[in-house]
Length: 270
Image 1 (cartoon, rainbow, N blue to C red):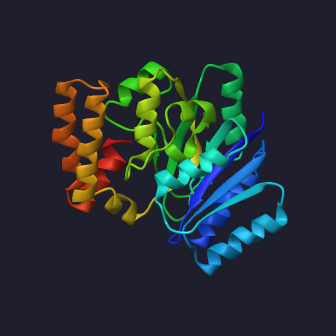
Image 2 (cartoon, rainbow, N blue to C red):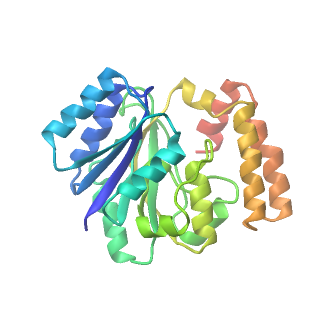
């Protein structure tokens, strides 16, 4: 089963993280047929050199898309997805590390369950080094559980997913939805009765630090939560009671002091 891997990189990424991310893709037990990298605006010389190194060593694998200006993750992924050659596409972030059997295990699910449209997994959250795993973000396995979970939280770990391109395109692809590009896509797909599945083990190391939890806070993020809840209600994905409950809880977490938000994520939401 041939498949693509889709990444988006922008100027603030660290070259050493990008190096480890791509290495983890190239050292899979089942290797991708194509790796599509979207350069979301101008990059540093160090990032350009890192990408050039991989293109030189694997000239037939990489497809590079240059965007003249930074468009944001949603728009960059939309452009990149349209360029992917194969129907199965694995997502990957440029600072995370896929475990060696990730793609093999996801492809196995698509073979066994041909009606599935999205296959994700748990992720191990680590600080500095993969030997320092601080928590595991677990998500439900089966579609009905996933739909129920999606009423309050993102039901897939975005950098762990593999999905069918045709299904994503039918749901009108990624959209520009600040901080919630993936969650909004999954909601639309689930609402259209596309099926999801999460492998009940961690297949990816997800990099976190103090700034990770800081970035998940603030008024701007709280307002995006409200905007997303409005979409959920418009779609009839949640009822008015569920909407009110979410509005009274989710944005509050965004405006808490960072140490409290970090505690909630690490201890209560994992």
